Amino acid sequence: MSSSEASAEPLLFSTELELLQYFCRSGLRSISPDDIRALSAHSWAAPDHQIVFDALFRLANIPPAALRHQLPAEATRMGFPDVAWEKYFTPATECEPSRTTTELIAALTARPK
Image 1 (spheres, rainbow, N blue to C red):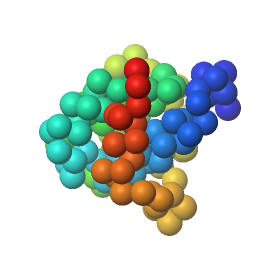
Image 2 (tube, rainbow, N blue to C red):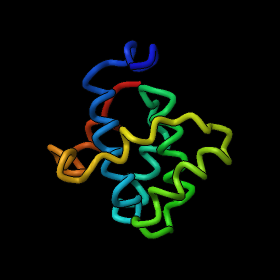
Image 3 (tube, rainbow, N blue to C red):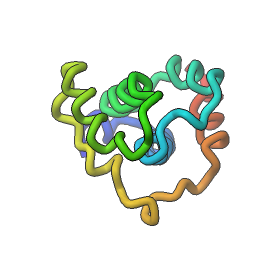
Image 4 (tube, rainbow, N blue to C red):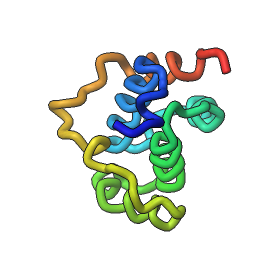
């Protein structure tokens, strides 16, 4: 765990990671423009989380099956080649969200800044 991960509030960090793992498998196509705006304004707990979300946002229109290959390349083009992608691309059976994406987004965006 990096120092930024250790300093992040554990529940916030795990909620973000759970949501990003889901998005890395399914993309952002299924969420509303309002949710995308809310997540874009969110202060991410870890720098890597911000990078992953930004890369997902840039690739919002590509098919989910292409994300595993396109996200690392996009993050590298953004200037961040050292993202630990293995934690975001865990098998679906290992990281099904414990809550719906709507619940996860609400948990993140309802937090005081």
